[in-house]
Amino acid sequence: MASVTDPSAPLLLTTVAELRGAADRVRAEGLTVGLVPTMGALHEGHLSLMRAAARRSDRVFTTIFVNPTQFGPNEDLEKYPRQLPRDLELCARAGAHAVFAPSRSEMYPEGESTRVTVSGLTDHLCGAGRPGHFQGVATVVTKLFAAAGPCVAVFGKKDYQQLKVIERLARDLLLPVQVIAAPIVRADDGLALSSRNAYLSGAERNQALALSRGLSLAGRRYASGERSVAALRALVLEQLEAASVRVEYATIADPETLEPLNDSELLAGPTLLALAGFVGNTRLIDNLVLGRDPDPLATLPEGAK
Ligand code: AMP
Image 1 (tube, rainbow, N blue to C red):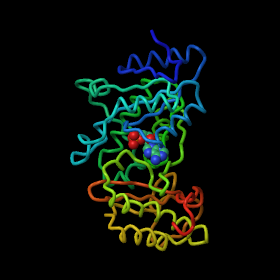
Image 2 (image 1 turned 90 degrees about the vertical axis):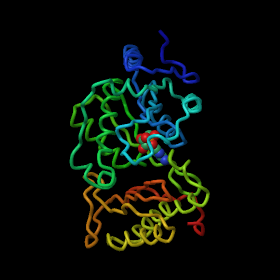
Image 3 (image 1 turned 45 degrees about the vertical axis):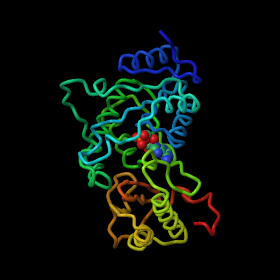
């Protein structure tokens, strides 16, 4: 049986048994497994997770699965970009040793009926507008953790609430997984990379820049001493509305519990500023932990922010 040793030609695994066997063999050699779960249509953000996994483990396993249970009935499951051959090449270039790309029935065998629910954390932010979404995420990630076994798993802060949900489920279910958070990777103009950016027209992409611009403005206002939730939210909402982004939420929340702060409150310590909105039909999210994260537009010249 092939072993997981050569990052220039990652091993393609399609069954749970193959994934489990390959990960077991890595550990039997005294090496560690790094896991990077994705839905494919890979971009530099995903590749940065693979590099982070390579720094923290001996063998990187990337998973590519468009998970049906995390999509709502009116969401983009059918049109979500799928490009496995290209993704495999990108995985090879990013140093993944193995790619797990299962079928739907492999992950959800006929007659399955178990779901994983993380309560509390999932009431807020995206959980409010996408009922069932985090249950789908928690279920598939639990399955991936169960199949991969003890590992280091890397997730992006781009999906901040998802990261918190996964940290919580790994802890609550006593899973032998160390969850690592990786920073948001952005395009040169500040837009957070996302597989869904492929849906945007040129004009929509310009509108979408209001998210990172709003976060940057709020971050700089926070750095110069502003602590009012109302004032910081107003700044962001002004940017989003000026660019005709249909706002789902612009919320300032506790970075651990994700409990939203009221407009009448003042920030005390690092606080999450999380945004979700639609540009045309495309739903985009972005976030910044005020008082902790760098300026999302740090690489742009002052006049261009
Ligand atoms: P997805 O394929 O969108 O489900 O994302 C798979 C993983 O990549 C998740 O942990 C995401 O948070 C992470 N990710 C997606 N976009 C970015 C980005 N721009 N920067 C860093 N991580 C990202």
